[in-house]
Amino acid sequence: MTTEATSTMTLLRDLEPVVEANLNRHLATAREWFPHEYVPWSQGSDFDGVLGGQAWEASQSKLSEVARTSLIVNLLTEDNLPSYHHEIASLFGRDGAWGTWVHRWTAEEGRHGAAIRDYLLTTRAVDPVALERARMGHMAAGFASDYGIEVIDSIAYVSFQELATRVAHRNTGRISGDPVCEQLLVRVAQDENLHMLFYRDLLAAAFELAPNAAMRAVCQVVTSFQMPGHTIDNFTRKSVQIAMAGIYDLRIHHDEVVTPILRQLSPFDRTGLDPQGEAARDDLAAFMAELDTAASRFVEKREASRARAAARTAATA
Image (cartoon, rainbow, N blue to C red; front, side, top):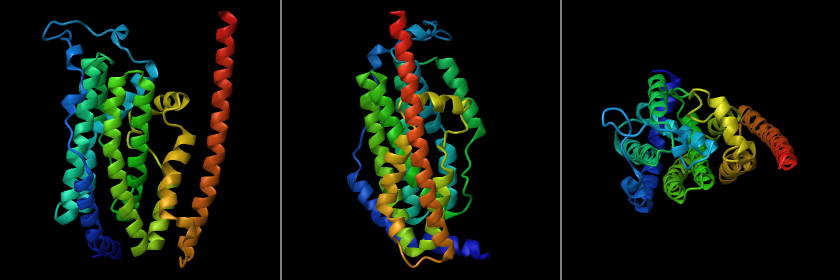
């Protein structure tokens, strides 16, 4: 057995009591909810095809183009749940508190894709054929963690990723212009927030058990972070649209995702690190400064672009 494998198994074992405590807190806090209650079924009608209904047309959608884009990206990301489950079940195991959490998390996440898809199809918000083709393509490609069997790296990633997903859902609902959509995505975001709290507190415990490894993991994840849906077709173009609309951009990523997690972990206040841990902390601090600068630059360019667009509109009015 390799040293790496032994270290991984030891960490999983040492974190088991923390997992159990946080699982119990989660089960006591999480509220039962039912996806069907958030879908406006009365707005639904048959599509063309087997049932001979009405074909979809863009004019049927009440959502703006960017709201549709963001909802599709969010849904396709949720659709890869089978791959996510495989990854965490393989890493954390299926026994004890770890296994109970893995299955509970998967069950809760399964509601998200079901509810969002039902909303989109019932309200005719998106092209159902294009959506299904995108789902097939994205799921067929699957998902694989960038961090292999590194437990701390994976815990660090999901800590930031769950919060990023919460923010993306919440802001998508806000700009949708549809109170029904916003209500649904607020509910989904509440689940994501509880998941973030679970993983964040697990990461904090890992810092106490293996501070140098945890520091390196946080630095690695923060400096290379990608959303789990980054393999979606044309993701870069879609993410630019989403950023320009203020749904999820560098400023939001810095201020509302990375900074709050780091504030809770206090990596810059920790002492007793080895040279590698110190180097990782220095790299993390430098990256955060660079991210802040890049975020400010992006916001300035976006505002300038919006001002030019407004001026053109005024000139042609």
